[in-house]
Image (tube, rainbow, N blue to C red):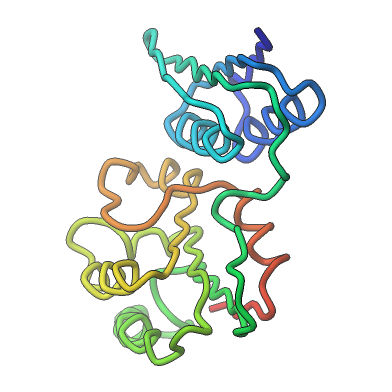
Length: 199
């Protein structure tokens, strides 16, 4: 069994170490030890994307993510950034705050609510919505943007929510929409997109 001790490592290091081990050794079984919820979710999701069945064991504050597979290599591609087979333009919108602009926070909050409500007007060209830093607050229980984000997700939009950011703001348990993700998925999404819009 391949073993990786990723305790004390922040995003995206646990996923990157797991990715390197899978690509170099193609182990039939791999165990990754992590000490935070975002890393547990991200490593599990990555292993699933590589064809592994995952099981998570917990001992105190540690998570042991165990992946079991056939050891056959899977074409490398981040799970959240898998490009659809289409000629349509793929746009990634990166939201790095829970308000738009600076000068008046109340106005900025209203503008962000209106922006999220209007995103659907981009149609099929809107491929990924990435929320980082305080932008993750738009996904939590009670957020004025929650219903609109759920509508977008139900319509097929992939929403990536930074796990490190959720953990920083102690909001992991309050997130109600989107996939908890890591910087590897974010960077890969940006790489595969035709256009990236930063808000």
